Image (cartoon, rainbow, N blue to C red; front, top):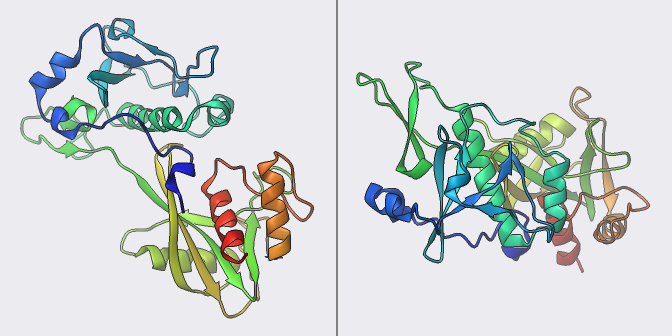
Length: 299
């Protein structure tokens, strides 16, 4: 699968790891040419042309921390971490959904990375080991405890989530949660837990949510999802028994859909419409890519 078609992938910014570890090089980048990504809390700020709004470092508040996002050519790109926690929800809101609809792929990826990083810094101002204040290090790709007796190092986290389609006799297992728009069905999903492989997480989540035993798990595609900071790991699996025992505390419905139904729903979603049998996830979601991959593989 072409990862360039996955929302929040393909940033044009060079992460420049060597610069992160060189304080002198970082300071040298903080010139009038450096760019500061303007954000409204955690939401993107767009220009009238629907591009990311970049300012200069002088736009940052004096008491803000500057996170080094990377290099755009020879110019440093930064984001601002203000002393107060960013306003707005850590989950996708109207401004983020609008950005997904209008931003060019590389810009959307740049925003997604910045959003995850700024949110992580805002939530990790204190050491999880001793409770002392932490300070930004390595250009913002680390925070270090200021307690001389501790000095614990903390790094931006990514939460792995398995999201999977399950196949039986030419049909696909999909489900809906109560928070979904009316008629929407999507791939089942859940966080990977400590001490399990991706394959084990897929099998466990499918059984927990649908009572179906999944086997032969196959990795398909991944997607960074900065709400707040997940890595969606798209997989496909097979089942030998179609009987469903749904977890009613989490799911509103789980059912099998035919290839014809999935094909029609995917094509409708790509037109911005809802399919006859169900509404497929939007094109910006990795679940849509999984459904499209399954349709094309069986063509």
